[in-house]
Image (tube, rainbow, N blue to C red; front, top):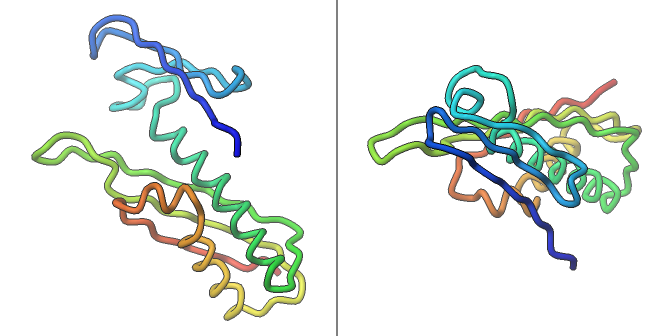
Length: 142
């Protein structure tokens, strides 16, 4: 399996500084700052990148498990929401909510939920983030 890279450059102090986050060969590059991470400022932040990675990984894992169960999805659309909260020992990602909607011909609700939950447990990013409370809301499109 190939190695995947990300890069970040930070210039200056924490509150007044800023940086650039780059993924892979630069197909995605975004600016980030204290404001974009801890307030509602413009730019991206590490938690959004974790959310995007988790949503992408989960969608692929769910599609793979659906196929293994004999169902070919027309589409799987997942949003991951990541909560960064301050505790006594500093900031931590405390929870992640995966909200997925699947258009899967021929599957019933019970089987859909079973496969959705199995994919949550088997997704490599879910496993990497196993110290975080990860919940799932799965909706079968009609």
